[in-house]
Image (cartoon, rainbow, N blue to C red; front, top):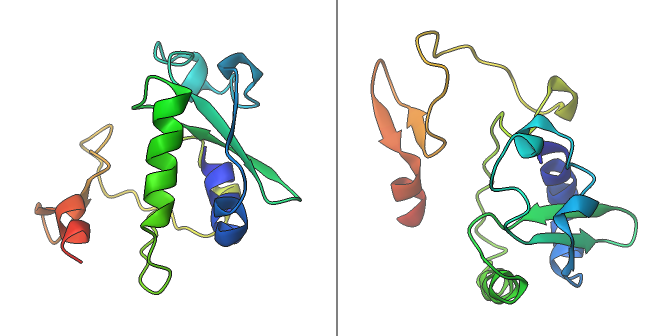
Length: 137
């Protein structure tokens, strides 16, 4: 969720170095948010928790079927972090509101209800595949 993502970024090394624990989906503090409550998949994937000693955040491992698989992928990926070369992306999904405070609302897609998260505007009516660009960095 957006609030947890912003918190995660506020102390990235603290959260990354903490132990990943898993909770039952019904124990999630976000379970009543429409993004989860209305999602048929919720409850069928692992929910992890990280703590930096002051706050906790939840991670939703949407693409994994077990806690073991999620943990293995998480540990593999955090080992690959290049702390000298990072790119952070944030968008207005997952409960994001203006309270998160560090973004500007841009109403640029009046003809569309949504846009794929991996595609971003680049000039008039042109889009770039941001995932492809990032993977080439």
